[in-house]
Image (tube, rainbow, N blue to C red):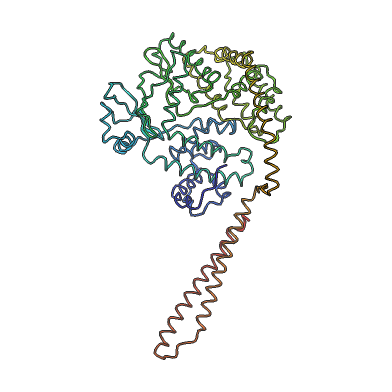
Length: 562
């Protein structure tokens, strides 16, 4: 769960915090801000929403767009979580578009040279076009030619100081979301703090460009198809804030100039590649939409932008096969049983309600199984049912569903007759054979026996250590109190008020004592002494009155939150 914003972080981010609060208030979220006790001074002049007919999800999308690239990126990543967020919110977040203005190369150049460890980038590149070919919230891409090999490359450079700005925004988002989760009962079933925490970690990982380079290299090592490829990675230029890829010339999949025979061939090749990645290798491109695919002049399909990738273990792939089988049979009981076996949480599940909701989803799609209906869409709807019923599955399942939907959309753009189900069937049969062939079953059985034997050998030692700790008095019981956040807030507020009241009383008492102090015997000092005492007493009385009024005002202002 996301931790609350620390006091020091709050002060360091106060300017950005006020900006975020003002944008939220201007889009009609004043009641929400009141629920989390935002300081009144943070809310500047509130401008009424331009369209009061917008629903809450549409207004949230506008908030993210107004707050800039980091928040847009956050929303785009959250759009891949239909398993835990409402469908209306996911739909709006999918409409987010990054409109990032490029920054000048003069600001990028120091970062480029520092990462490459050179005095001037021309030591490595010729024909370096200082106008970026692409600009995102995290980095900018430039076209250049390697000096040593004359190869054209894409140079991706991170924006300067972006990490600090993104971390500050994530801290503020985490703080706001945690306050909302604690105080708005309707949001608690979604566990927004955990979602925001995992999303923030994912965005911070994208700041390390070596991860993207490693993902592209791993795909190239596992890819068995010549028609599909990822750009070559230049390892000598793979750094945290700078990385270099092969420059790929081509067209987007929707370009009408692509010949029809090439379209049909690449639609099938792209579908086979994605199923190979998901079902067989367990490592896949998590966002293969049309903007991340290039059709080359020699009739191949290139997957670019490997910053977001998913990974499935062997058991996760087997779960996927069981889930697809249960969906094809329209068997809600089996779907529920498979999902509960893979659940990560320990929440008590209402099985009757879960089966009813799963059955409703399957009935919706039953008449469409013979049509070209997206498998990924069915899986996404089921993942949301699982999540809303307390079954939390790994985020990679929603990523794979999104990947299937994306590649199907691209496939149908290239070939209107493209059917993702027909492409996927051979891979699911291969997975079933991998799972149940005699050699695999024997090997898994042997490993299970070995594991149990190893545990049995360790059991006497574990028992002996337990009783030794018990005898030495080293057994401890840890108790965790939940739901006491509000109690802590009220306690802190009470202590602050009491402290201020004591200080006020002390100043008032001291002022009274000062007035009653005996004057000095030296007559020449009497007038000076009297004036000083009067001034000190007057100042003390005014200060005590000021503090007293502040305490009373604070009690009246915040009393309703007790």
